[in-house]
Length: 381
Image (cartoon, rainbow, N blue to C red):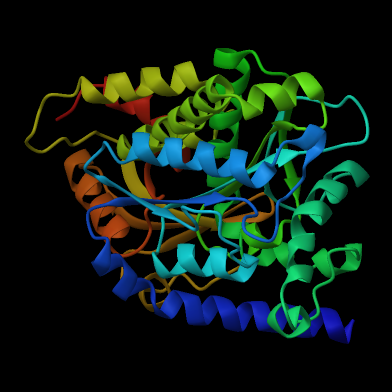
């Protein structure tokens, strides 16, 4: 128990240190949506080599193609943890993302198994629900053994010991909803566009995910150990198609954030069409003057966490009118309180500029949360 408490304490110290550099990093990337792309393995770590294919090369090719597509957008900045056949320690990958104050972290890998298992699966951080998820995380985490003095760098974390994962979810709690949303968007593109076998969105204890403080996912693009799938992933066609699906998932996620869809973000993210319809309805609002909606209160949701924090301005980077609500096991935190939709849009921009890039607008009527898109269809004063 003492070891677990020590591990959690070290995580908290790391989080405090990382957040203290956020303001400087934000200034560096101001006005850009920052995506960190992480090609798994590299250098002396080939990853899995099922059927003679190299995971490190396939992952790198996919990441470079995704990055090239994203870089065509002037408001997106792409940062790579590696662009060549280079070994980068797990802690180094997380540090690159944190130092950049990134909006997203996407790690790309290829799977392996001693069976005919095949298909795509996308992971977010969580306590693995079953032995299979544990084995996937264990395989990816074991790269730390290639580092000298790894015990001092990872505070005794042991990829082979399930009890080592107890503290892992603390860092990513605030981003679980967003991470799951992004994972589902990517996974849906694999399934619907490419007709790949869908192994689902899952949770598991990946060290590289737990140490980032932004929405983060790990994509297993398929099994090299399944010969047809390995051949596909090793081909230019396969790599181009997988890259396009990941790119589309990222762009769909960014579109939702940009349009401040609000409550729809927390609905079943598989129902993407309804989200897009809500975005279209929002775009139909033409009045650029005051947009006051009777009996409606708008707020900006900043975060959702199992941690109970005092709703004070100093705890939320100086933002004003902070409020807190409990929903199930989560505490949700908000800023602002207005019936003017244009005013709350400005508050949302301020929140993003202060370091809450995933914040969004929500609406209340008679103290109950309501669908933002439905409010925007109603008459204004």
